[in-house]
Image (cartoon, rainbow, N blue to C red; front, side, top):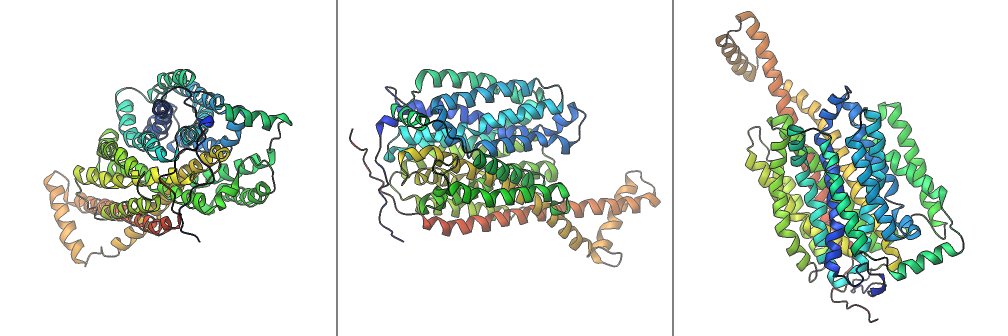
Length: 537
């Protein structure tokens, strides 16, 4: 494979810019507002699940459909959002998505039953799924190649910092107000976003011409392609999100959705390859540059969303933190991001993406390996600094991956590319969370069994621990007969706690190995011309 610089299939076409007469950086800020709202909402709802379940007199397992249905709707619309943007018009489609997300957020907060909330979460997911791809396509078309890294750096603040403050904000709102407000806060942000988009963004003439040409011969909708991709990713999302709770393939429910996903996926790719105007341009995945960027973004999503999910869980379940306190432990990582992202945006303009990505993945590998040093008396500072360590590597991943993914695409492919790169991030997040949940459940049982093997009446740990615990219980007022039984119960609780911590260490170890593999994969990216000048017009 050639290692010569890739100048891209295209120069920069100013006629595709969404800025019009306005400053492009203003446009970058405007599109980041809705993204911040979207990504924040994805992480903030997790914290309030128990409160939602309680208010509707439902079980926690039932309440998880609030998350699952949102992810399914997101997964269904993400891959086809590029096609929809081309048919409806990018600005119009983007505003429809923001409006749907905002209105459905209002009705989520007003919901009086769990089915009502789930219904509006589906609508919210459909609206949210089209926002990020449209925003990234807008940035790719509005900024010339040598400025894209800085533009995506600004955008990256919203995408990566929002999940960091989400658990803290969600915990604070839930503790001090009610879960309804985690949805209500989206409404003013959505209205602000819609107002600014309507005022500042323009629909580029080049895109409008392409849309008219597409519609001139009559709109041809790839319904079969849509049904296949929706079935494939939607069913896969159900399997990933519900698999561990339902005991994976021991459940007929999971087996059914797994079969649907596999069959739909197997049919989807050959069908889309045979279409002249596919609803998803799967050929992009088989291009070396974009395909590699897709794979790496998949892994970034797995580590970012996976750790954002399990770190608060670890602190709350094993260390007794409140939801708000566990969120506060993640916040220093967000502040570190604010400092590093602008720097990463600058150096991404002078250093090849593959070197930055390899460095970022190496930092994430070391950060995850550092988390394997977890001990039962770990301090707040340990968690805070561990998160900072991890977040230092993410700007060196998100920005160059996004920039590199557009480097050898034609202008008309940016909408499709944006859709697919967001599919990678979201699907990776689902895989990362599912992997963590499975490893935690299985390894906790294994470690508990192994630890229990060493606890029997004639063993030294038993003889040193149980009598001492019994004495403390007697001193606290427990009868001598009951103290022995209670001491055994306390010992079992200690064993379970230690087994849980060991299982979390296994998860971090798996993340570290996964990230280490991506260090090597990064070098499959081609060199790109970082000094490419905009094409003259």
